[in-house]
Length: 426
Image 1 (spheres, rainbow, N blue to C red):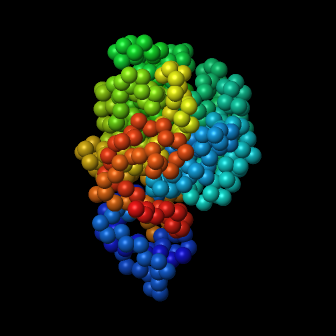
Image 2: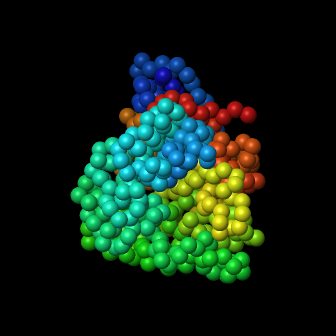
Image 3: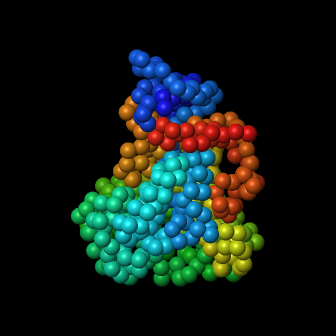
């Protein structure tokens, strides 16, 4: 379908565009900005007056719970939630059941996402077979099956030598290794940041050093092997500083942070609020400010949702026995916009952390509105206020600490490959 999106404020961080103009789409591609091409006649006009038109959002981490955990959510339900949130591309970690350690599992996820037709789903292949941390996976076959990188998710490797061999294998095939920096021995089954709050509540704690020690170890191996590496979900200011230094020294490393880490601290645990049970844990106000600074400096070039939908029972019981994670697709854009509203980022930079930043990390086409680009587009009203309500969440998981929060900025249209997959209606 030929579509014209008219009179919107087009913000394309990848090309430095920020002006009111029309956008014209044909055959799933962007064919013109501003004046329509000769002979172009739109079959549908979308009015974006007073709204912002930006590339479709790209989320670096979203657990869709399928295959293996359909009692929590499905690919169909979560890609529909993503479309309503302006997200057109999702990256699924390998800790499904079965694990994404064979091409067959990756292809299954890709096929089910295509059947849903609401969002594009990329997969990360397992770094080790079964994520057991002892035997390397067939990374070459996983790359051939379309995996965007490899990761061991939150599962530790058996020892440092295995990590070195894994990085060497990945480097050989030019695969990016996605790293969750956590020393399993220092973390020791903890569930909250080691500090005054965990001490007061009597919760088993995870010290900052569990992250920083792991970052230091991985940086040494990255330097030795030359592998391209991405650090997932940083939680401490010190780790962000270490990544900044490594980037300054020329190491091929990038990093992301989850949106909730930029707005919540361990103080939000209150009296054992299990909705704030996340991994890595919420840390101090100093860490929050340090992470915001890293995002502003582009040391952390992507903000992700770290979406983990759960059934209600998963968040019931003693804090340490509840399952970690937040249902976060529908708060990714508004939480990031809040950083711009508070002056931490410019609006263009905020959108860059959701579009061109993650696109470059994944090495994919997307995150831009340039002529010829895939027509993955998000249109949102930057002035519309709304309140997050469990009854209106489209995700199957309602486990979010942001219920009742008032946000400013609501998605009105989402287009995937030039097709309208979501339109807001009151």
